[in-house]
Amino acid sequence: MSVDISAQLIQATVQDFSSYFRKLSAERRARPREDLATLIANAKIDGEPISDIAAMGYYIIVAAAGHDTTSSSTAGAIWALAENPSEFAKVKADLSHIPGLVDEAIRWMTPVKHFMRSATADTELGGRGIAKGDWLMLCYASGNRDEEVFEDPFSFRCDRKPNRHVAFGYGAHLCLGQYLAKLEMRILFEELLPRLKSIALDGEVKMTQATFVNGPKKLPVRFEVN
Ligand code: HEM
Image 1 (cartoon, helix red, strand yellow):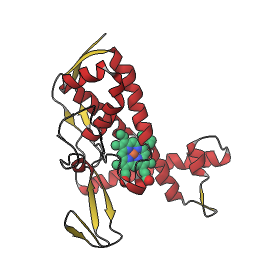
Image 2: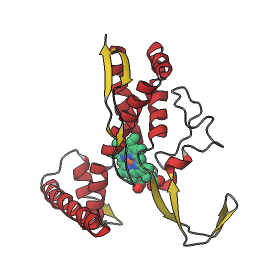
Image 3: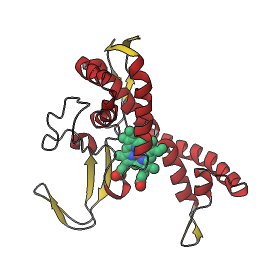
């Protein structure tokens, strides 16, 4: 796909989202409810209503940020368990490993591959000079395989401790939904694992072709239930 076409597609999608959320915003200003849409619709900064573009930004990120990320991490956990019978046995034998399984799946999959930052001051990192205003690409997937931080970084261990991964980013923009994502995944595995007797891959795994957020597109598995 050419850059032009993909830029047009993104623009059309943002417009689609915006026309949906503009209606929702007007509706929540007229009839406020106890919900996040009402909060965004009526948000003020220094006494002034936030701009339309800021409100649309909030709506779109809240609606979009949790989809491919959480589902890719969940699929990553299934993939890892299907490939690692000893990890499957470990977590089945002691379900208190589930929070560790969730964290490790998020590290292992790292669905958000990168974000950009611009340096606000001259500095040095890993022996390399960074000048104020430089653009930096934060490669979370690479950071999460850093052998100076993680022992045996390419293996999947649901009892990895500590697990200081950066899949949710770092600093002021650290993922707002990280606790929701982990809660959803934990509840799913608490319900699923006691019922699952075995799981194995049953074909080739295919990833979504994307450079920003990706994960398994096709993950054929064979499983038995109790
Ligand atoms: C496993 C699932 C998820 C992963 C891996 C993930 C990852 C990330 C990453 C890497 C960032 C950027 C952090 C930065 O720039 O430093 C981010 C930001 C954000 N995420 Fe998530 N996310 C996940 C789930 C969710 C969910 C479920 C929601 C909400 C429904 C959510 C809402 C947000 C929002 C609102 C931001 C922007 C925060 C800001 O700019 O201050 N995320 N996420």
